[in-house]
Image (cartoon, rainbow, N blue to C red; front, side, top):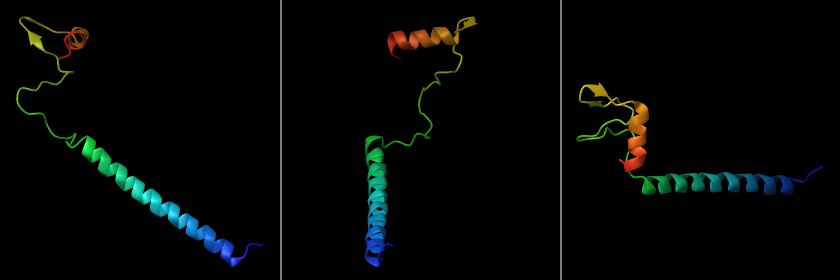
Amino acid sequence: MHSISDWRRWLRFLIMVAVLAYFIFHLLQYASRWVDPFERRDQPGGGAVKVFEQLHEGDGFVLFKDRLLFFFWYGE
């Protein structure tokens, strides 16, 4: 049978783990905002083009495969 002091020590340990986990969680959230400060949901401005959009060149259109190869070749 455990004594009351053992239960108190165990409860104190659990509370400390919960508090530490809370602070680490918020520290990681702050660090992620610091590393990536831009909202990912923001719409691109200017002449931005979606990568997966079919681009038209002249009479025909550019296939996805060709656009992907162009992207990797030129890093555009």
